[in-house]
Amino acid sequence: MSLEKQNLIEENLQKVFNEDFFREALPEVDFQKYMAAKQHLKFHKGETIFEDGDTPKGVYFVQKGTAKLSKQGVYGKEQILRFIREGDLIGYRSLLCGENLQAKAEAMTELETTFLPSDLFLHLLEIVPKLSFVMLQKIAFELGESSNTVTFLAQKTVRERLAEILLLLEQKLGTDPEGFIKISLTREEIANIIGTATESAIRLISEFKQDELIEVEGRNIKILNRDKLIKLGHVIM
Image 1 (cartoon, one colour):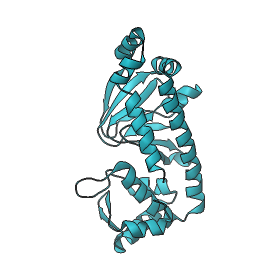
Image 2: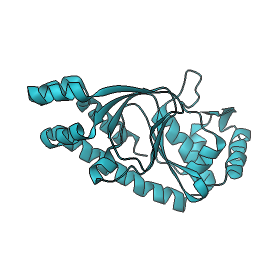
Image 3: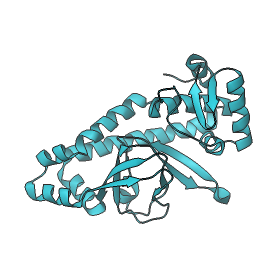
Image 4: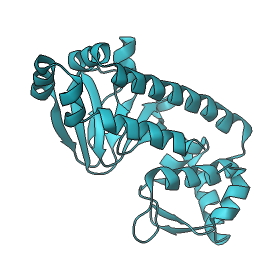
């Protein structure tokens, strides 16, 4: 897992996506443009941030909450591509490529974001080297994650994939005061993440529960035996 690298990149993003950084990094004229153009946007749970196929209007820096990026596949079935948490940035890839958005973004909790319009974001990349460098780091990291996902789906069994995904979600999103992973997923969503049928995901979750690897309350899951899940998923922590 590359959680430490992800945390480092998100820390760097938080350092550059804030008013204090841009006040020092930008000429006064550009700073005033930044202040006038940026927006604080909130989204309710289940609300769409942008749709697959839309023209990119800018980038969203997540200040609070969790979101997901997904894409419809064959027969309209949703495929979750990745989860977005505080300190992450979305909407930039299609903007940089000059193409329409290639995924749908949806709030999974109450979400707060800082929105930068396209022209402002591109201008900032041109004149702020540190911002450009952080974006290069993020793009390189996500390219590596995409390669890992291909291996994950191709070489691991469904049981191993479920174990690894539960560990990854706990690490990435954290837990609530009762120890449950801070995300509520349907069985269908879990099935889509690990690349199996919904019925298989339901059966595996039940088996994990019977084996006392996890505790389940509705859509919420708590890891009870982390060591066994690590061995089961052949995960390097």
